Image 1 (cartoon, rainbow, N blue to C red):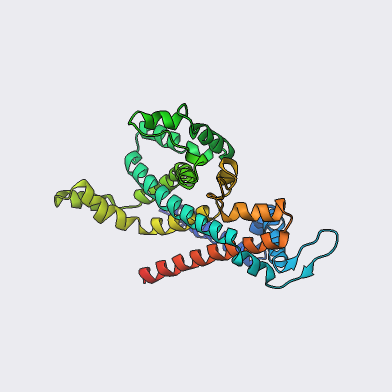
Image 2 (cartoon, rainbow, N blue to C red):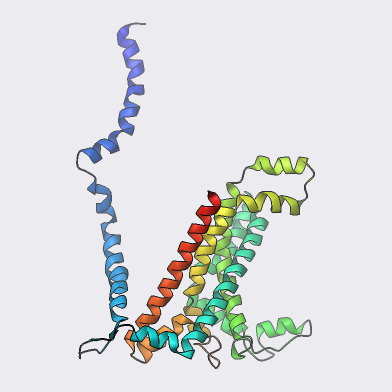
Length: 314
């Protein structure tokens, strides 16, 4: 083989490293701004519709907002009024109960669904798609469907179902004793398919050899779940806990559409209270203070979970 032929054969192998290093070369040549150029439209929308209103809400929380008359500085008076009101404490407790119930309920149901539909067959693909439908359906439609099913008379769909076993009829969202639990069930039904998809992604990352070794050792299905599946899904549980908890703290639409905080304030949550204070009563300063407190609680929860996760990883 001649030298020229050997050069031709080895030339493609020399092009590959150059192609790999081309993006780095572009960054060194001053083209670092190209990715940011593609991100610019989304960043502009985020800044204008999210971050600027957040900064304005923080400023309004320490002011008495008077449209067309000018705002006046009140310091922490808005926070003191929010924290000292019985309505806010009741709404905060309802929010915590609803967030805890929806978080653990949706994670448990999503985990069970993920175990049932894990696989690669076409039938399971169809089942997964059907189970994911509650997530993509607009929340207003979901709330209206559940309102119909929660009809308090004996003709209601759920009352007819529980009547088959001799229970009911129940008032559901019209009864102060069951209204909060009824909203939690709606949230679990809608959030569980989302958790299911994340659990499926986590299950795909678990080594199949661990299951085979456990089966050879005589482990039952329950033992494989406890000693192989759950330890392998620890990072997934941590991520889902944060996402589900934030989703629970920000519950608004289903409460607003199903009960609007009633009956007798039994389902009033922080988000609906903020809406009523800020938009219905035009007390924008007090409503902004409540929103900042909710943001701070969510931020503290997220940071605590991340610190606990890092400590366990270390």
